[in-house]
Image 1 (tube, rainbow, N blue to C red):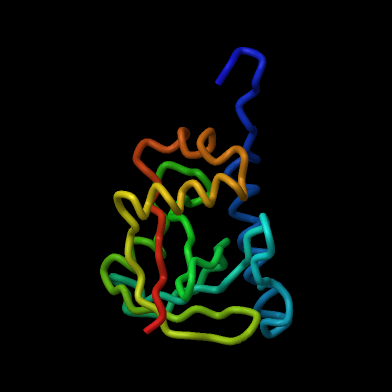
Image 2: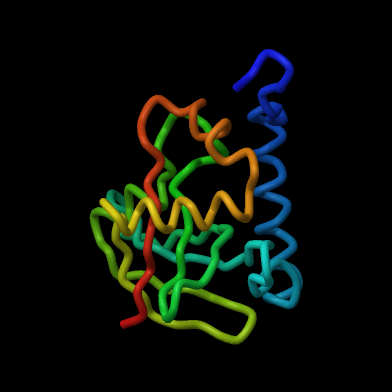
Length: 152
């Protein structure tokens, strides 16, 4: 990053967490009529992913950005660009079977991390959606997983 370029600012962590809570709450209150959207062009979509808690065994739902790669859905385990891995990703690594709700309906998926050439290709696609991707990712101490959700 050059001296003239500014590192993109993130809102405070409390604000990011509050925004997630509000988004999930609006989804719940409207019974799914608000909160999800299909990806279009260079805009990501929003999906609801339900995993099984690795310790509790309870169903845990989050709303995540995604794009489509053929029949697969692609998201990132970035936890609002915070240091820790998101709980949903830890859950998915423990039990890869999950449910996804999309505007067009739900489906069962199996999650995995992309690696090698596939990860590079999918990361490049995210760069088309978010110009600041690399700057945000550099805030994290470890590589951000690119997560592929394959239909069952």
